[in-house]
Image (cartoon, rainbow, N blue to C red; front, top):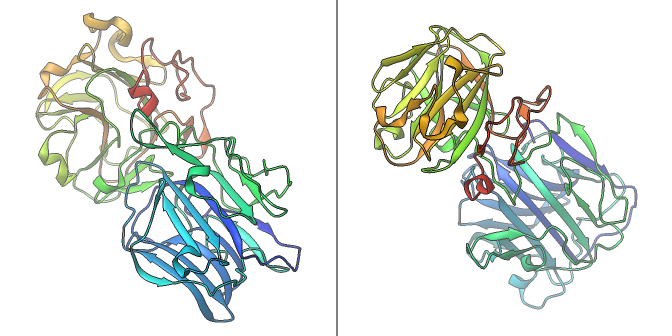
Amino acid sequence: MASSTRISRNEADPTGNTTTFTLSQWVKRSKISAEQAIVSHRYTNSYYFHVRFNDNDTMNIEEYVGNNRTILLTTNRQFRDACSWYHIVVAVDTTQATASNRIKLYINGTQETSFSASDYPSQNANIIIDGGAGYARHYGDRGDASMYFDGLMSHAHYTQGTAYAASSFGSTDATTGEWKINTAPNVTYGTKGYFIFKDANSVTDQSGNSNNFTVANGTFTKTEDNPSNIFANCNPLASSGITISFGNTGAYKAGSGWKNVASSLGASTGKYYAECKVNGVGSNGVGIGFVNLDKSNLQNGSIQGGEDAFSAGIYSNSGAIFYASGTTWKTVGALSNNDIVQLAMDLTNGFLYWGKNGTWFDSANPASGATGTGGLAISNLTSGGTYAFNVSVRNGGDVRWNYGNGFFETTAVASAGTNASNIGIFEYDVPSGYTALSTKGLNL
C-alpha cells in the first residue's frame, strides 16, 4: 500500500460485538518511525478498535468506547525491519479469567509478553470489533484518513468467535528456523469473518462469506514480494538524505551532495538481474550500478557510485560508466527521463553488466560466463564480500527500481520479457542463468 491507500468495508449489521476473535495479517513496512495503522474498526474518534505501529516503532492494540480507553497494549519491543515481513496475530478471548490471557499478541510466531502499557479488557467484555451500523473496517489507515500504513500486506484473516494462536496461520521452518506462512489455514471464520489479500491485490473475501472490501482511497498495487519470497528493495535504514517511496522502490534527492542507497539484499555468488527507470536525470544527478556492501564507509550513505574503490555506476548526463575511484571504463551515452537501465550481476564469474532499453552496452553478453563479454570484471574493484545493486542521487536525481515486482512506481511493465527462473516480472528478457534478487532467487 502506498502512503495514502486504504481499503474498507462498511458494517450494515447494528449488532455483533464479540468477546472472542482473531486478526492475522502479514505486513512488510516501507516507512518506519511514523504512526501507521494496520487494521481499524471505527465509528468515530470515540468508538474504535485498532492495531497500529507507533512513531517509535513499538506496536499498539487500542480500544476506545465513548471517550473511555478500554484497552491499551504497547510493546516494549520495536519493529524497525523494513526489509522483511512481519506476521501479526491478535487473539482475543475476554471470557478468560486471567487478564493477560484475554488478549494475546504474536509476532512471527512468538507471543509478546513485555509491554510498557498493559490495560486489558474486563472479563466477558464485548469488543467493538464487530459493531455495528455506521462502523467500517479499514486496512491501511486508522479509519479517518490518518495514520496511513506505508508498505505491503498479505493474507489478512479475521475469525469471529474463535481465538487462534499464531500456529494456526504459520509454522517454523525445520531447516532455516524461520517463521513461514500457512497459505491455507484450517480455521472457522464465523458469519463476519473474512480472508483477503490471498491472491495478488485481491480484496475479495476468500472465506466463503462474501465479506468483500473495496479500495477506498489511493492505488492498490500488486506485488511479487510476499511472505514466501522476499524481494530486494531500497533499504530505508541506510538511505539518510534520500526520499524513499513506492514500497521502497523509488529514490530521490533534491539538493547537492551525493547520497546513495543499496538494495536491501545482496549476494556473494550467483547471477542476478534488476531494472532501474530514470524518473528525473536532475543535474547529472543519477548514478546507477553496483556496490560492495561489506565496506564500512558505506554507512555514511554518501557514496558517489564509481568514485571509490568498491563501486561502479553509469552517470545520467555524461553517460560514462565509472569504477574504482573515478576510472572511466566506457562512455555509452547520456541517460534521459524514462530510460530503463538494465543491470546484470554475475557473482559466479565476477562480471558486472549495464544495458539500456533492451540493449546491452558494447554488445555485452551477460550469459557469456567466464568469458565476461562486454562486462566489467569485479576484480577491478575492491573484491570479495557481498555485492548489491546501488543508486546515487543528487540535484533532482530520481529513479524507480523494478527488482522483480513487475512495476515502476504503480505502472506495470509494458510487456514482460522472458524469465527462465520464473521469479519476478521484468520489462526486458532476463539473461539466461539470471534471476531476481530475492530469497528464492538466492537459494536457486
